[in-house]
Length: 252
Image 1: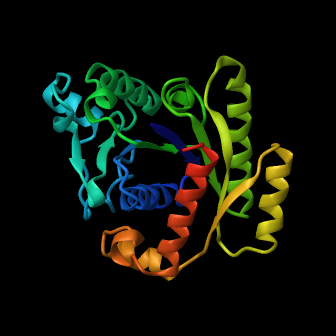
Image 2 (image 1 turned 60 degrees about the vertical axis):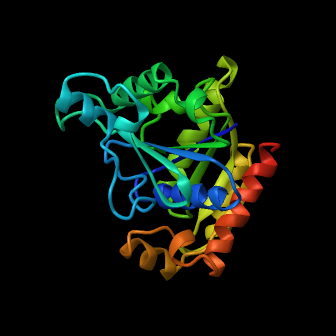
Image 3 (image 1 turned 180 degrees about the vertical axis):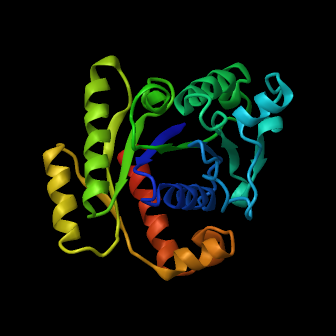
């Protein structure tokens, strides 16, 4: 089983990339689970045609009890991807990171991996703050590798550097390793050079580059991934190439 955590600052496109990677892995015949670890609970929306499963935290608030089955808190999306969202607390009344901790504990109790036996698990994680619950996917037993999405924009690079530092600080505890950076282009000045410099600074590498394409926006307006809306496009091929590169780096 390949378990990957995808981090990046808010707005960098991590959910778009993660859901297209999920669809790309599914197109290779892999059984995929995507878990959105963001209180916005919209990680899987384009795999599900504009809908989402009831987030775990919402379920627990609404029913005042834990779900009894994975089916209570999941939906099957494009390519057979099993979609789960952690959700978060009522705004202003709790810590979103604790929602991730509670969700992961629940998924263990429900024996998610033992029951569904996925080939690939993708965690889509908000990376602006890497502490508490937001570091959960890095921990042993959850993700094997962490990939960080960035652009050449200063704030994205700053967030990526902080995420890489967190992975490094957790290294001695047996947590996940940094797999590399993914450049999601914004076409800013000296973008490749800036991201390459970041990779060198954190002793990592850029493992893939994604073009800035109108097809991504067009697909999202249709509430689909590029892999579903434009499967024969050059952009879809970029996601397939990235998925293959991740498989290669992870040794599967």
